[in-house]
Amino acid sequence: MPRFAANLSMLFTEVDFLDRFARARAAGFRGVEYLFPYEYPAEQLRQQLDDNQLTQVLFNLPPGDWDAGERGIACLPDRVEEFRAGVDTAIAYAQVLGCKQVNCLAGLKPATVGDDTAWQTLVANVSYAAEKLAAEGITLCLEAINSRVDMPGFMLDTSGRVLALIEEVDADNVRLQYDLYHMQIMEGDLIRSMECLKPWIAHIQFADNPGRHQPGTGEINFSNVFAAIDQMGYEGWVSAEYRPSGETDDSLGWLSGVK
Ligand SMILES: O=C(O)C(=O)[C@H](O)CO
Ligand SMILES: [Mg+2]
Image (cartoon, rainbow, N blue to C red; front, side):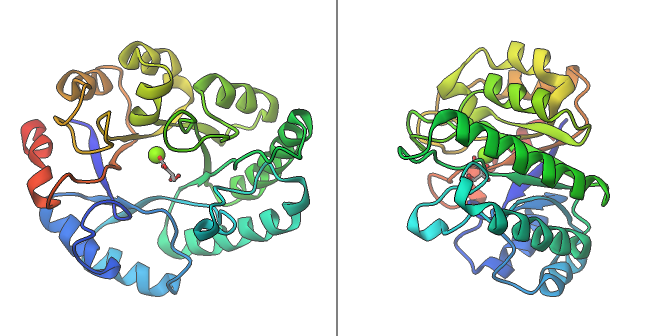
């Protein structure tokens, strides 16, 4: 059975954020992730992890102005200073939280910025972050996010784009975050793709498609996918990053099904 984690930005939203840790533990999870920790003092989050014997699996580097629609700043040439400051902030949180992986959101490419400029900015920023994070023993994840439904214009929208970036940056701690939901929309052929990409995959997330709800609400055969993840010898975390179609606790049938 894969090691499942709960994404607290999407699961257990029936309760306040800080109360979601206990709900995740009660449901049987041993690991949690969420979009961003920055609204809370790191020590307060650490307390929640300790109180509930949970591992912090992942969070994202500061993404720019999320509420204004920004989805990362790593490809933006006029935001390099802010990106670098964000790496320091993320490291400070990761140290307190004992978190060994952070995800870098590549960002939406503005029409005013050329493809090559955006790509070179991304390469330089990821290289910079990788070096700083390596000194802390932290892996930098890069997620391919679908540009068809959820994030039109996102810089890294296929596993091939992420692999090209990993190859160009050429650092041992830069790896692929494989989100089954996004990959089903962009590429399909999930099991064979994961088997091929396994050497580069550091983190897996999932939701069914269409709808981004829990397993069983869409077209992905999760029994077979989870079995394949086990069979390929993947040892990282597999995070439930879906919007429950009703109450979170009622959406967790897939978890007892694989226990
Ligand atoms: O949206 C996703 O799939 C993610 O995993 C990011 O953390 C947020 O964009
Ligand atoms: Mg994801």
